[in-house]
Amino acid sequence: MSYTNRDGGRRRLIDHPFVSMVVAILLFAAASALAIIAASSLPLLQDGLKQAVQVVITVGFGLAAYKLGIRHLGEEPRDDLQLNKALSQAAIGLIAGLALFSAVVGVAALLGSYRIVSCCSTTNLLPELFVAAIMPGFMEELFFRGILFRWLEEMGGSWIALFVTSALFGLAHAWNPNSNVLASIFIAVEAGVLLGGAYMLTRSLWMPIGLHAAWNFTQGYLFGVPVSGVAEKGLVGAKLSGPELLTGGPFGLEASAIALVLATGAGVVMVIKAFRCGRSVPPPWRAPIT
Image 1 (tube, rainbow, N blue to C red):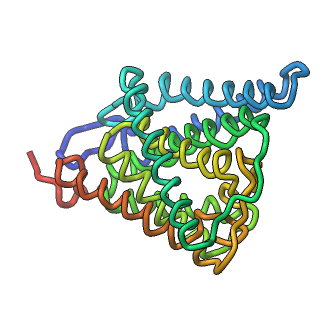
Image 2 (cartoon, rainbow, N blue to C red; image 1 turned 180 degrees about the horizontal axis):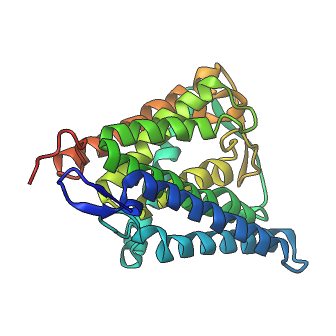
């Protein structure tokens, strides 16, 4: 079976952006399911080590699904996880995520909404690093930016892809502990624009992966605040106090106006730069006919 693309050419049906996206989602789901099955058969290990191994298995299956299947789909196959860009772009993302959330905490501290109340041990480092940072950073970016954003952009252009993936990313956090409508909206705007902007600017998943992982690790382990509603034991024990608009309430600083302004601002800068550098995609109905 085939279809006619906007340039009049005949293509295989599987190359249609919507079909490619559905196939990619199925491959992602299959890889995730296989990772769960493989992880469930692990021998008895200490909790921290077991969690680390489970994350390595999950990320490994996700990477394999992308490299062997997902990247080959579509009219114009491409690899958004090129290994030669991994170190440099992930490092930029890690530094940016660390700096950005440190700024959020710094502003909260200046406003009296964040204070350190105790020191904690470093024994929680391994599970925090793998479970709260590496796995969601990789798997969520692979799904939301590497699959959804990529093909929504082909179907409707960069603006539609940015809007839809941001909304879906916020909705995905609606079932987190201590979440509410406002927290989901804040996550959709600040994280959706920030991570979508990083992907648009670099046309690679490594920077948003690094940014996402560092954002989670910094708030949870370094500063001891909840990560998307999940309470974490960090390097320090911290207390959030004051209006929920400044603290984010039980959900954490991600649901605060501070994070909304700083993260969204950084994301907007990257989106604007991406458009100025010609790295945006116009909707098909506005694309020039060649």
